[in-house]
Image 1 (cartoon, protein in one colour):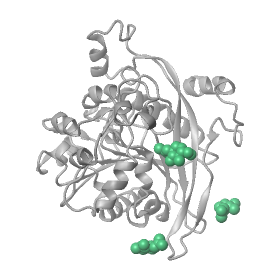
Image 2 (cartoon, helix red, strand yellow):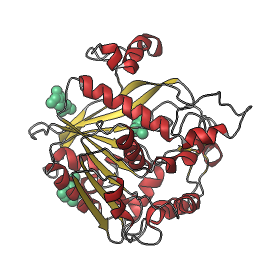
Image 3 (cartoon, rainbow, N blue to C red):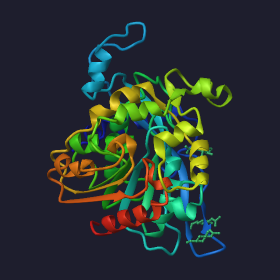
Length: 383
Ligand SMILES: *[C@@H]1O[C@H](CO)[C@@H](O)[C@H](O)[C@H]1NC(C)=O
Ligand SMILES: *[C@@H]1O[C@H](CO)[C@@H](O)[C@H](O)[C@H]1NC(C)=O
Ligand SMILES: *[C@@H]1O[C@H](CO)[C@@H](O)[C@H](O)[C@H]1NC(C)=O
């Protein structure tokens, strides 16, 4: 097949590249290297630190909803477009990603973990700076031989910050991640190709993975869903109980530059209501609050439309959730997590793990090391 037919978005990226950045291309790649490689071995013990670098990836999305969308002409069609899982605006974005490779001396597995963060989180969540020897997913997984690639969704972290209603919403996340996976499948990433891609998401990141598994069942070989079910009764009340507020109002100095409709938790108490329950360190909550990021009105309106049945996905799927995930399990989980059997009816394996005394942001609770071991066991048995 002709390369251009195979990779229309990549072709656009390559054409657009010289105009969008003055930075030099790295190793014949269209990706801009942002971070510095950090590697070494922790002096106090033998925990190997991964080699991590940040890159900027240009991504194009095509508009799929008919009509023009603007605040001046705001009408019900935007809701219908969100419900139809459509893209409302054609655009080019920069997506910030962080690649972490196992330290020298660790045998590398040929599976790439693609990591999708939750709403008001960023890619930082996968390499949590609080007691990273315990809480960093990235450190744990790279020690187990996996390469991790954590993205900032469009509108988040170091990615582009376009319109918070018509551009930063769930289908934009789905299409940008799908396009990125197509590129990785065709040519690898930074000189390496992978035998398998394991897509792991938390909360809205899981919902994006669910939506991709439905529309593009061959994108990921393995799926890991964290902090999600398909029970919608408490989702919006719990989401609203986090009291998310216009980011520019919460902290004008830090966030005043953001466009309209970017929002986050205004206080540590609100953050705790949204994300924590049971057994966790106060320090983890404090670090999480400090490093929190944004979601948008567009994301908030659209995300439940992407909780779907992935009829054709035939790989294995893991679902991990806190027993007291009030957003997706009401007060306490009953049968909700096991809906993964119906929602991934063709999956060749289903593993469900529910962690006691644990709230929504399960990897920031004492359950984190158990979760990481469970996910590693699951992945190891399927690669
Ligand atoms: C990190 O590792 C790379 C490749 O293994 C090496 O070239 C580089 O010098 C190392 N950097 C540090 C700070 O140790
Ligand atoms: C070394 O690792 C242990 C557990 O694996 C951890 O408790 C300890 O804090 C680590 N020390 C440093 C300096 O990273
Ligand atoms: C964005 O980039 C800055 C500077 O390199 C870095 O300190 C910060 O952690 C990055 N943020 C995210 C979400 O990756």
